[in-house]
Length: 83
Image (cartoon, rainbow, N blue to C red; front, side, top):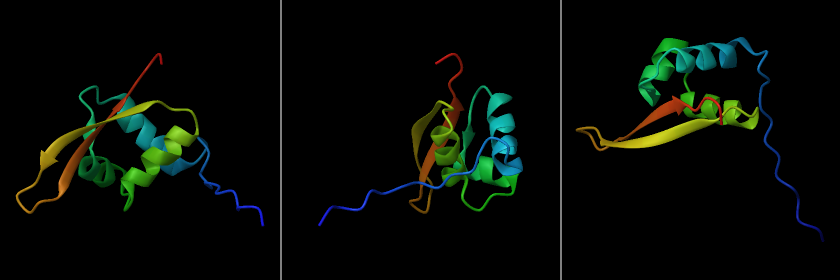
């Protein structure tokens, strides 16, 4: 039996949600943390929004910044232009 191919169903760049995330990343050269991106966009899954942007060919770099006082990992996202 052949293994099933996994697919990723992502939104397009016409999506208002993805447009908003892309716009915020475009105008924040110092990047945005996951919580900042989620707060600005009203998204409950900003890391998924980043994954969907990447699936649409947008180059986004992720930088690990450490942990919060409660032990949660903090990541910052940067739009990589001209890549």
